[in-house]
Length: 163
Image 1 (cartoon, rainbow, N blue to C red):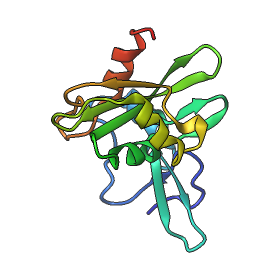
Image 2: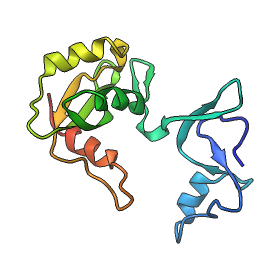
Image 3: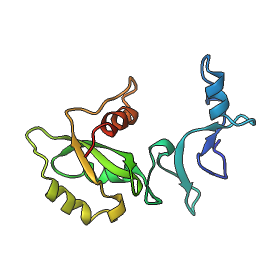
Image 4: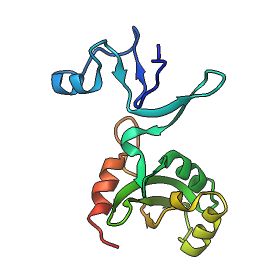
Protein backbone atom coordinates (compact mmCIF):
# COMPACT_ATOMS: atom_id res chain seq x y z
CA UNK A 1 0.00 0.00 0.00
CA UNK A 2 1.27 3.46 -0.84
CA UNK A 3 0.26 6.51 1.14
CA UNK A 4 -2.25 8.67 -0.70
CA UNK A 5 -0.94 12.03 0.46
CA UNK A 6 2.49 11.66 -1.23
CA UNK A 7 3.99 14.40 0.85
CA UNK A 8 7.68 14.04 0.19
CA UNK A 9 8.92 11.47 0.66
CA UNK A 10 6.29 8.91 -0.40
CA UNK A 11 5.57 6.24 2.18
CA UNK A 12 4.71 2.54 1.83
CA UNK A 13 3.39 -0.09 4.20
CA UNK A 14 2.48 -3.75 3.76
CA UNK A 15 3.41 -7.36 4.49
CA UNK A 16 6.38 -7.28 2.09
CA UNK A 17 7.87 -4.08 3.53
CA UNK A 18 10.63 -4.68 6.05
CA UNK A 19 10.04 -3.73 9.69
CA UNK A 20 13.27 -1.84 10.30
CA UNK A 21 17.03 -1.81 9.99
CA UNK A 22 19.05 -4.58 11.62
CA UNK A 23 20.56 -3.26 14.85
CA UNK A 24 19.91 0.36 13.77
CA UNK A 25 17.00 1.64 15.88
CA UNK A 26 18.05 5.25 15.18
CA UNK A 27 17.80 4.72 11.41
CA UNK A 28 14.51 2.83 11.83
CA UNK A 29 13.01 5.76 13.81
CA UNK A 30 14.25 8.17 11.14
CA UNK A 31 12.76 6.28 8.17
CA UNK A 32 9.52 4.93 9.68
CA UNK A 33 6.53 6.89 10.90
CA UNK A 34 4.89 6.09 14.26
CA UNK A 35 2.07 4.45 12.25
CA UNK A 36 4.48 2.02 10.57
CA UNK A 37 4.83 3.72 7.18
CA UNK A 38 8.30 3.45 5.58
CA UNK A 39 9.56 6.71 4.07
CA UNK A 40 11.07 5.52 0.80
CA UNK A 41 13.18 8.58 0.03
CA UNK A 42 11.75 8.65 -3.48
CA UNK A 43 10.22 11.73 -5.05
CA UNK A 44 7.01 11.06 -6.91
CA UNK A 45 3.52 12.15 -7.78
CA UNK A 46 0.13 10.71 -8.65
CA UNK A 47 -1.21 11.72 -12.05
CA UNK A 48 -4.85 12.47 -12.88
CA UNK A 49 -5.45 8.75 -13.59
CA UNK A 50 -4.05 7.69 -10.22
CA UNK A 51 -0.75 6.32 -11.54
CA UNK A 52 2.33 6.77 -9.39
CA UNK A 53 5.34 8.31 -11.14
CA UNK A 54 8.72 8.13 -9.41
CA UNK A 55 10.95 10.94 -10.61
CA UNK A 56 14.04 10.56 -8.45
CA UNK A 57 15.47 10.21 -4.97
CA UNK A 58 14.98 12.98 -2.46
CA UNK A 59 18.60 12.91 -1.40
CA UNK A 60 19.71 13.14 -5.05
CA UNK A 61 17.50 16.13 -5.86
CA UNK A 62 19.58 19.15 -6.90
CA UNK A 63 18.23 22.52 -5.82
CA UNK A 64 19.90 25.25 -7.83
CA UNK A 65 18.82 28.86 -7.48
CA UNK A 66 15.66 27.63 -5.72
CA UNK A 67 14.69 25.38 -8.66
CA UNK A 68 14.43 21.59 -8.44
CA UNK A 69 16.44 19.45 -10.84
CA UNK A 70 15.70 15.73 -10.89
CA UNK A 71 18.94 13.97 -11.88
CA UNK A 72 17.10 11.13 -13.63
CA UNK A 73 15.67 13.60 -16.16
CA UNK A 74 19.10 15.01 -17.04
CA UNK A 75 20.66 11.52 -17.06
CA UNK A 76 18.07 10.28 -19.56
CA UNK A 77 19.00 13.08 -21.97
CA UNK A 78 22.74 12.52 -21.48
CA UNK A 79 22.47 8.73 -21.84
CA UNK A 80 20.69 9.13 -25.18
CA UNK A 81 23.66 11.00 -26.68
CA UNK A 82 25.77 8.95 -29.10
CA UNK A 83 29.11 9.19 -27.21
CA UNK A 84 27.74 8.65 -23.69
CA UNK A 85 27.63 5.14 -22.27
CA UNK A 86 26.12 6.23 -18.96
CA UNK A 87 25.93 9.20 -16.66
CA UNK A 88 25.29 10.27 -13.11
CA UNK A 89 24.09 13.76 -12.24
CA UNK A 90 24.89 15.20 -8.84
CA UNK A 91 24.60 18.50 -7.05
CA UNK A 92 27.70 20.20 -5.72
CA UNK A 93 27.95 23.36 -3.61
CA UNK A 94 27.81 26.67 -5.48
CA UNK A 95 28.40 30.04 -3.82
CA UNK A 96 25.59 31.86 -5.64
CA UNK A 97 23.01 29.16 -6.43
CA UNK A 98 23.31 26.83 -3.43
CA UNK A 99 24.08 23.88 -5.69
CA UNK A 100 25.28 23.43 -9.23
CA UNK A 101 24.34 20.59 -11.57
CA UNK A 102 27.36 18.39 -12.36
CA UNK A 103 27.38 15.48 -14.82
CA UNK A 104 29.77 12.58 -14.36
CA UNK A 105 30.07 10.74 -17.65
CA UNK A 106 31.30 7.36 -18.81
CA UNK A 107 31.99 7.69 -22.52
CA UNK A 108 31.72 4.92 -25.08
CA UNK A 109 34.96 3.29 -26.18
CA UNK A 110 37.00 5.66 -28.33
CA UNK A 111 34.79 8.67 -27.65
CA UNK A 112 36.27 11.97 -26.52
CA UNK A 113 34.37 14.64 -24.62
CA UNK A 114 33.39 17.48 -26.95
CA UNK A 115 32.00 19.83 -24.32
CA UNK A 116 30.79 22.58 -26.72
CA UNK A 117 28.86 20.01 -28.79
CA UNK A 118 27.49 18.41 -25.63
CA UNK A 119 26.32 21.78 -24.30
CA UNK A 120 24.71 22.61 -27.66
CA UNK A 121 22.82 19.29 -27.69
CA UNK A 122 21.53 19.76 -24.16
CA UNK A 123 20.49 23.35 -24.86
CA UNK A 124 17.76 22.03 -27.19
CA UNK A 125 16.45 19.48 -24.68
CA UNK A 126 16.74 20.92 -21.19
CA UNK A 127 15.90 24.20 -19.50
CA UNK A 128 19.05 26.19 -18.79
CA UNK A 129 18.92 25.65 -15.02
CA UNK A 130 18.87 21.86 -15.59
CA UNK A 131 21.93 21.85 -17.83
CA UNK A 132 25.12 20.71 -16.12
CA UNK A 133 27.54 23.51 -15.35
CA UNK A 134 30.41 21.06 -15.07
CA UNK A 135 31.33 17.73 -16.70
CA UNK A 136 33.65 15.06 -15.37
CA UNK A 137 34.66 11.94 -17.31
CA UNK A 138 35.54 8.69 -15.55
CA UNK A 139 36.07 5.09 -16.64
CA UNK A 140 33.22 3.60 -14.57
CA UNK A 141 30.61 4.84 -12.12
CA UNK A 142 31.04 3.53 -8.56
CA UNK A 143 28.36 0.98 -7.69
CA UNK A 144 27.27 -0.85 -4.58
CA UNK A 145 26.68 -4.61 -4.32
CA UNK A 146 23.15 -4.12 -5.70
CA UNK A 147 24.52 -2.34 -8.79
CA UNK A 148 23.22 1.10 -7.79
CA UNK A 149 25.39 4.09 -8.57
CA UNK A 150 26.92 5.48 -5.37
CA UNK A 151 26.32 9.17 -5.93
CA UNK A 152 27.51 9.96 -2.42
CA UNK A 153 31.00 8.83 -3.46
CA UNK A 154 30.83 11.02 -6.57
CA UNK A 155 29.72 14.03 -4.50
CA UNK A 156 32.58 13.44 -2.06
CA UNK A 157 35.13 13.02 -4.84
CA UNK A 158 34.19 16.03 -6.98
CA UNK A 159 33.30 18.42 -4.16
CA UNK A 160 36.97 18.44 -3.27
CA UNK A 161 38.02 19.32 -6.82
CA UNK A 162 37.66 23.07 -7.42
CA UNK A 163 36.79 24.25 -10.89
